[in-house]
Length: 333
Ligand SMILES: [Zn+2]
Image (cartoon, rainbow, N blue to C red; front, side):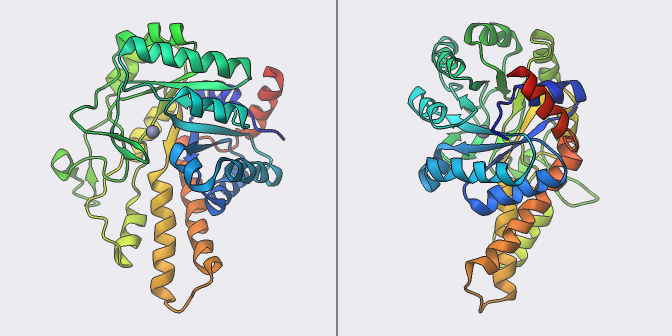
């Protein structure tokens, strides 16, 4: 089973009112944790690699880890570049076996974003690869992408039709109030849920999402910065020597609502980092004499698997959709 693009995934996700999880990968245990959960639940999955991940692990290692996952799990997998900063990085990934790339020109003026995105789209399409573009800017920090809250702005619905038409992009990342990182909002921006004690941010701007859907009906929309910063893992980290104070994510009920709409791809990175760190910290706290990496990476991988299974079932709704997507992907070839 070769890697596929996101075309069949997004078509089925849109029709079925679910979303595909896009999980960031940096090493073997993360790839294994994600794909074993997806494999057991018969769910498609997008494995995405950031510029930082390529610098850390090396492009070739990541591509081959993902190919190994394909040999072991009979599910549709797309390999995607997350936040491609320029044409050269996108080209390296297109030439190097990826099936999808994001070109993030969101910090450029509108016309320049169109021009640069179009250049990537033309090269990608000529090589059978799809392109995600971005309009509007999320706040927060993720790898080498960092945007101050005062520079962040929502996507303007009146711009999306022209942007999609002129660039020819295949999906569009929008800003409707999600944010990168594990500290998405200050406590002052949030209200504390009286039942759970968890800080909750202002609701996502579903009104903007609806306006965008009206302008480009059926077009696949992507949500970045969509980790929910699951309190369970934050608590394990803090109970075992960590110090993550007031980490805030996007409530899962809102993400589930988004998954039912034109949102076809939901990105998850911070939640993976938190789950992995929770597993390692908990293990070392329990067994201070352990020094075999397999001893502490196995529980970290198990938490990643548990987290991804939870996302597939409770947030994305993509469970069981793998066979239909594989079938459609063959037809679309
Ligand atoms: Zn992002």
